[in-house]
Length: 249
Image (cartoon, rainbow, N blue to C red; front, side, top):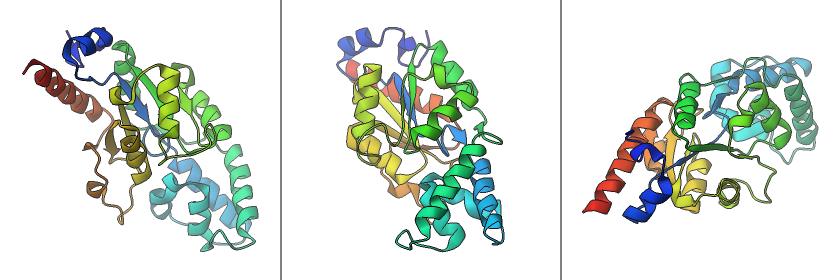
């Protein structure tokens, strides 16, 4: 018998027995959590900078901003706010270039593939909730070979509101057929944690993601912080042990 919620092979029976929710669904942010997309996004920004006769930026300077999307990268590269007329055309050109370079150097984070295999073997659910538009999310997950394995894929334009609003989280639960209280959401930005908390989920900070020196994940009120994808399993096992212990007390 596995310690992930007593094999999680019968989560409904466990919940009926304990009246305390075990976690049987793991939902991931995409950029900086599930996949290391920074190399392609940084390359795209530098292609645009060179195209506009500006010097390239070091990868180390770009990486912490990747989770904040195209607008943040344009602001970084061109020192320009979104209210400047030239901003929107630059952002559109960035997106066009990114379409051409979507999965050249992007990979799953080390250990993530093994984590997904473990989740699948336990007959648990996993899915993706990202603010990345569907035009990029779905082709990228297909290129990584994991789109068909995901129980749900919720992109930034799937719902009328994006993270940190809980609407995408609720839709993911509806698609999978689970309750938020049985879900763990993992992300590398404060809006990820806020979205999970707003939906009533357990939350973990992916400390291996795109977190800047100005960020303090300890202030995000997440339920935990993990340094590697496989550490999620250890955290999940301990959480479900505690839940089962509470139910027996």
